[in-house]
Image (cartoon, rainbow, N blue to C red):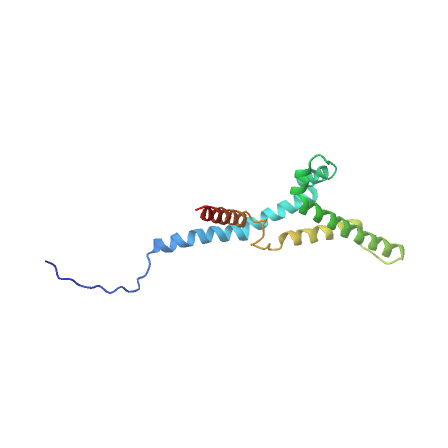
Length: 153
């Protein structure tokens, strides 16, 4: 028979493989959030402003038979309308200043400034916990389905 011995459990240094296993997803998530998301947001903003998405939204504005699509893009359509109104007010104030004889920037400078403002708005860091984030939507969907499954027994 072997004598019973106790072994003290103490802190151990994790192996390098553990660090790699933990650091890899963190590094990928950081790359996704800090590099890919801002690039795609800028590309989407440009597309909404002057690309294929802009022409699609213009087409959608005039077509009453596509109610579901119009509802789906309601937020984008409202933001486009608000931006168009802001830009029109800004152009009108510049035109008023020109009529009064004040020096004003050229139309090309105005367009360039509006482009810069749009790019700056697109580059802003979005709220992570918004429903625009597919990760948040997926987690909320899983939580809802889990809650329903738990309640059903």
